[in-house]
Amino acid sequence: MKPLITFVLLSLCLLPIIFVLADSRSFSIDYKNNCFRKDGKPFQYISGSIHYSRIPREYWKDRLLKMYMTGLNAIQVYVPWNFHETLQGVFNFAGDRDLEYFLNLANQTGLLVILRPGPYICAEWEMGGLPAWLLQKPNIILRSADTEYLKATSVWFGVLLTKMRPWLYQNGGNIISVQVENEYGSYFACDYNYMRHLHNLFRLFLGEDVILFTTDGNTDKEMICGTLEGLYATIDFGTDTNITAAFIRQRRFEPKGPLVNSEFYTGWLDHWGDKHASVDTVKVSKMLGEMLSMGASVNMYMFEGGTNFGYWNGADHDTRFRSVVTSYDYNAPLSEAGDPTDKLLAIRDVIKNVRAYIHKTHLQDFFSLLDTLSPQGPVQSQYPLTFEEIKQYYGSMLYRTTLPRNVPEPTPLISPLNGIHDRAYVSVNGVYKGLMERDTALVMNVTGQQGDQLDIIVENMGRVNFGSYINDNKGLLGNLILGNDVLTDWSIYPLDIDTAVANGWLQAGHSGSGMEAGDGPMIYSGTLKPTGLAWDTFVKLNGWTKGQVWVNGVNLGRYWPQRGPQQTLYVPGPFLSATQPNNITVLELERAPSHRRILFMDRPQLNSPGQKT
Image (cartoon, helix red, strand yellow):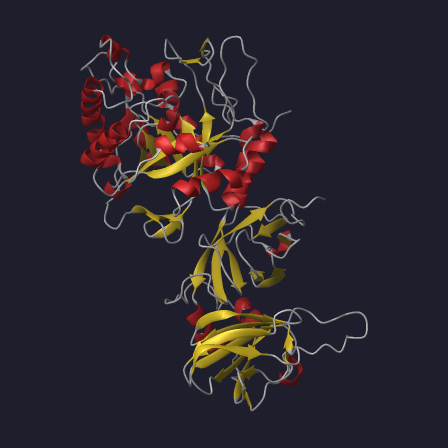
């Protein structure tokens, strides 16, 4: 028996159109940190395509609510030109064509909108959304800078985009981005003048603040002809594609900014005479999880397909003409009739795992919190002392001194007797310089001025438990030499991070500024929203380098995904709260990702990516 999901719907006779006051609302691209920003905060969308033109108006709310309850935070919407201007000059936005009513329902449901107004939309829709009356001009070149085509397009957008402008997120609505044309790189014309004309039209009617983007298939030719300077280039691909290779292609055309798969295919269309298309649920859910864990924003095409009522089905013509069937079920997560499928349940579980966002505490704040992390203060010593001599047996200690002279040129900092036990993270005046490591990296170069503060955080990686080396002291076991100078006059801080975390002293609130995320040791904190359940889970830190994780004050242990093989940490259910926000703290020692996101997964990953089990 299939699992049953119950959706509770409220029947509303009148739904007022509500715009939020637009003060301080923004949606933008952060090219420095490779992400979207919503109201200044990093944002990743998890979206699904839905076509209002293929669903009865009476069911719009039902479908949108089911999408929201699955965990989506956005929808992607095509606007078929021929659906609204079937006859030239006669515009219809009433009843099943009431686009603004649909946008308002999405807004009330809590869903952002990625708008795709064409003018060409493909979508397996009749003539790709272009009105058939365009063909009354026998020599017209569609989707080009053809004068007649541009004239008609300009009139249409003058009507449509004027209606859409109040719905932009910056203006208080829920449209966060707008696509220009659609997969234009797959069309023969490759007419950049046409794309420039559309770009100018969109800016004229929508203003300068909204994100305009393109979507193209995963080939160089399509990306070359479909992209244009000033339009953010995104890519589309399905489960038969290598994710890394596809996003590398996007990066060639858009070196900075968020990774975006604008059409991740959850299914496929049917032609008359075909076998019903299907895409494997496991492949869809696995690939979706991988993309989200990379920080990519993803739109699933389709989330519900709907029906080609009347004469609205499209057709393909490659080697022969093939008409699209009436059903646009698409093997999507919601069936043609809007019923949840096993694919929806699998996708919901994937999305449920993408739940914790980490708030940044800067490196300066790490040192400014020394009174909290080391309440007894530093131990003064002419030469370095070990963990055992300080009576700090686990974790990390901070060794602090000053540079004894000017070192304008890179000068070797050396541990001559292999005295780094076990890893040392080196900063000068709060600027991270690199690391030293037992047995493998005993020399690094530093520069600075006489009197500059030299900070070395030394991490105990665990004592030897077998063999003749079990007398395994930790810390700096001997002198460090800078050039020809032995460093002396150390202030040594035992760091009781566990107590600070357990008492909640390192949770969000001690925010700082100055250094960019990812430069040396930093403490990050965030919360995991309660779900009503507290089951065993596994935390994955995709893009993070090395450090320690605490959940509700419990030290889960070390993570080091780049070294591997272990990629996840086990989180027993009793460590989590089913009803209260769960506090997450991460000590990242080397380099954090710009997305500052961790994942909670339903299964472990104990092998490095690509490693055979």
